[in-house]
Amino acid sequence: MGKTGIYALVFGIIYSLLIGYIAFTMGQHATKYATDTINNQVMAESISPTPDAFPSPTPMPDPNSYLIKEVNGKIGIYQNGELLRVVDVDVSTLRPNDAQQIEQGIVLQTDQDLASFLEDYTS
Image (tube, rainbow, N blue to C red; front, side, top):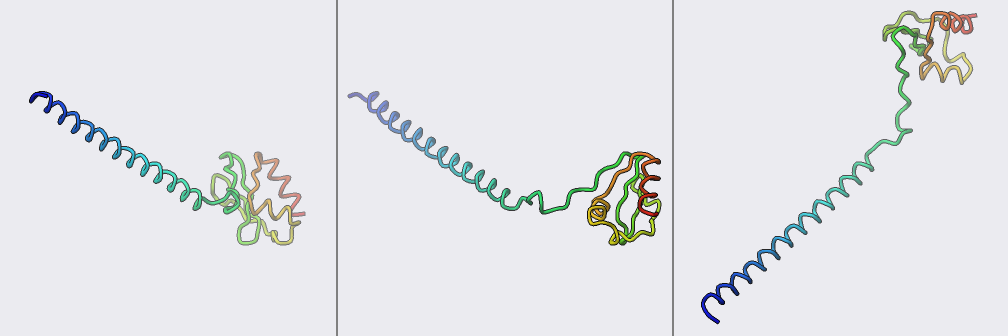
């Protein structure tokens, strides 16, 4: 084997070692990435609140509609996020289903709906 053959053999060995090292390093990075991704996903799932952890949000009414919601134990009437009026009716005296609906918020679309609601709860 001549000088060129020895150089080729040494080059082949170095090349093989280099390729092996690169493949090993990439495998290590891929394993770490996969492990980190799984750990992050598990952590996110473990701290994510369940749907029941928070009460359902207050309905977002149309700007022209009315939102009926409890205010200090009374019935509050809102429009465009502004409290228009507090009706002197204790929510605690209402039927449990009605009280729960008012606590969650009731959207009334028209003036007629509001008038009917007030008539039902103030008479």
